[in-house]
Amino acid sequence: MAKIKGHPLKGAFINFIQEINGSTLFSYVEKVEAADPIRFYEKGKEWYKGERFYFKDRDGEMTLAGLGSVHTIQHGPKNRFAGVESDWDALMKRASVHNPYDVYGTGPVAFGGFSFDPAQQEGEEWSRFAPSFFYVPEMMMTVYGGETYVTVNMLCDGAESEPLFDYIEKRKKWILARNDLQFDKEAVLKKILSGDSSVWKKSIQSAIQAIESDNELKKVVLARKVTAVFDQAIEPDRVLRRLDEGQPDSFIFSIEAMDSCFLGASPERLVKKRNSTLLTTCLAGSTARGKTEEEDQRLETALLTDDKNRIEHDYVVQMIRREMQSMCEEVMVPNEPIIMKVRDIQHLYTPVIGTADEHESVLRFVERFHPTPALGGLPAQKALHVIRKLEPMDRGFYAAPIGWMDYRKNGEFAVAIRSGLLVKNEAFLYAGCGVVPDSNPETELEETNMKLRPMLRAIGGSDE
Ligand SMILES: C=C(O[C@H]1C=CC=C(C(=O)O)[C@@H]1O)C(=O)O
Ligand SMILES: [Mg+2]
Image (cartoon, rainbow, N blue to C red; front, side, top):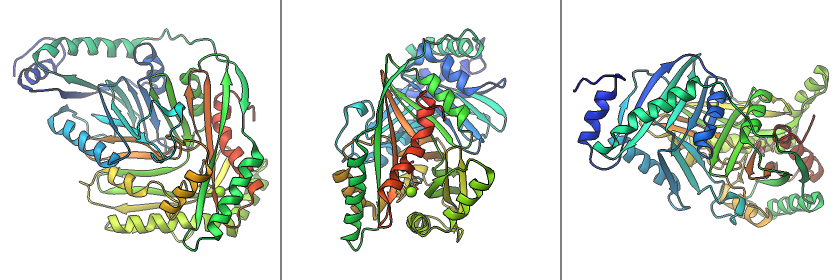
């Protein structure tokens, strides 16, 4: 290998670009001084606005912030899971990866997600998001176990790619060092359009009827959309920071696609795969947080013993148990749910753990689990049919898998609830609820209002 002055990997890079045939990824990881990944996201604004992502897991174990896109993977409705997987495999097979750290979430990563249901009518606001949409960042910060890493990815075409290395290194150093951030003037909220609640409550009633008139159909999850209009384009950076600071016990995610940004604070993990260990979540059944500790405890006890919520929850457990057992060697599902509390709401929660073939891709699990009965219903296909009929909107990426996968078949996906889409001067916020025969439309409406609060607060639409 030629010895070249400057960066220790420059020589390897030069050798690599001289040998390749067609476009190929060169990727390397370095440890850097402790840094704030949200700051990294913000600092990347000038160069990479419209091509940034952020993902923090709810355990606070790992955070990713990505800037730029060197490679995009998109697929239409057909074959969208397998299509992403085979494109990603093809890219990785030819990639040259220099990662001396055996750390989860470092090295080349594709970040993105899937739409909830590509067969739903297409909403114009979601035009930037294909049914599956992933990208590989040009640079990415990973914070894991208190250490900070930066991965650089370059897509090279051959020897003429030589200037790329120094160019991106320079950018990276500049972004890491800069401290002169400036924000635009904050957008002012003009109005909130919540939709006609009596119409929405009627659709809950229709879902109950659909369940009662079909022996097989047990549950349908219906959602609503609230539109907030601002005087100018909303800056995603501010909304993301407020979510991150205000919802410490949730997954915080953001994905930008040109002039649109989808972001949220979700309590729900779809799947985390790390080698042979799989974690997934059954989360359904909800109640308010109490104003005092006693009231909070009283609400918790009532939720744990409430038949309607226990049934709503149990359908999720049944499906997840069945899918996990069909794909894993060992599965542990507790017999009883526990409580998960986040700032605005508490849920029935059954954490599930399993052991699977480590060579199986995380995407295989995503495909099998989505949509769980916490977002679609039971059975899924029948529930989707009812949703298409009763929900006059496109869910887009709401209630769908969002997350990352790496070059070792690992990764983590959250369920993108408690979320909203920012497009220019509008914010579209989404919330849904599990409908079973004992559902009360008024109570379900209140439940969706609680679920909207984190996003409303983050866009400056609620002081609660
Ligand atoms: C569909 C949503 O929440 C799901 C997750 C937890 C609890 C739920 C419930 O109790 O209805 C929902 O199934 C949402 O937040 O939009
Ligand atoms: Mg519910």
